[in-house]
Image (tube, protein in one colour):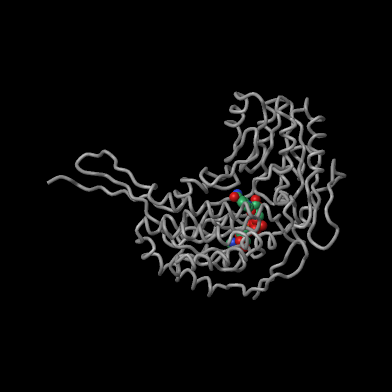
Length: 450
Ligand code: NAD
């Protein structure tokens, strides 16, 4: 079996790779299992040095990694550079976190009670195609920092940057077997990792549908799981917001990465009294987005990842849109920025489109905004725009979502927790919180009596 890797902007084949099967998966798990005792025993300072070296080599290979990612996903090179920069920052952060994630002593009678944070063992990491290396690093960083060894399975469509990272890790002297990368199918490699008795945990990012399968499969061996799944986030614009700023920022919050973003604020909720004015400002801002060749420095949006995905995205535009932008009509899986008017019951507002289609939905007042924003099975991200600070905090507390921003659409940072409520999953990535998902707490009582 082989994997054909395609450039979504030109439809050209970039690479043909062997696809790993069950046997290769078992071999990778075995190699990670053998490497575990020595890796967990590496002194914290030395483990930190190795992760720092990995971060530095990622920086040194930054342009090469960004080019690989841009070509494989079709994402603008400027965005890919930012993502690779974040990968290095993530490894730097977890290098520094190793000796700051420690246990406690708890007052008890007759002795000393202490807790240790133990690594889990071999962890299987399964990641999607939209931010391939970035999301892989969010899991690899805390997993390795905590003393686990890793088998990573990138998405079939976008395995190239992860394979390059495995090479870089070897150059960084990360010991053999500590970080294993396998390009292969979810239904083969992914499934085997989930079933394998020697894999202690699955860190999964992907669709809610596959997340359900991961959870089911993990039940057989009571594997730990963290699930970072889909989203249908709301960008809530109140009439008292700085409408110009909110409208200028809104296109990027949904069309960045061609809308293939779990955090995409693809439901734009606008207070009725400001609806017409905001809509006009939003159309003007969206018109300015530069769609085209991802390798150009000033491109802001590239194509979708595959032909099949473009068909899925197109199926969401069921009526004449309010606005449809420009996109190349050459080869490539292009789709224009599209704004539609909707109610929260329409399919475009209920399901994750994962493409450049945003639904504009009016609301009456604060209570109505909260009701509509929460009326979704998802709860990943979202934004609130208002000039009233107390209202901003009231609404933020009332929204059932894991990651929010006020008067901004940016809520993903290396050192702050990221993850979802409801069917957007559970567990947190990034920051110190991610380390919780890669350690077990062990409680030890030491008697001091006679
Ligand atoms: P997907 O669920 O189809 O695939 C994700 C990964 O799971 C891939 O590596 C795939 O090969 C693997 N997989 C597929 N079937 C499997 C199975 N039966 N067993 C084990 N592994 C299997 O998702 P996708 O299409 O690659 O990515 C898009 C989805 O990811 C969207 O829903 C998006 O919202 C979500 N996502 C979530 C986050 C987050 O942090 N919450 C971030 C990015 C993407």
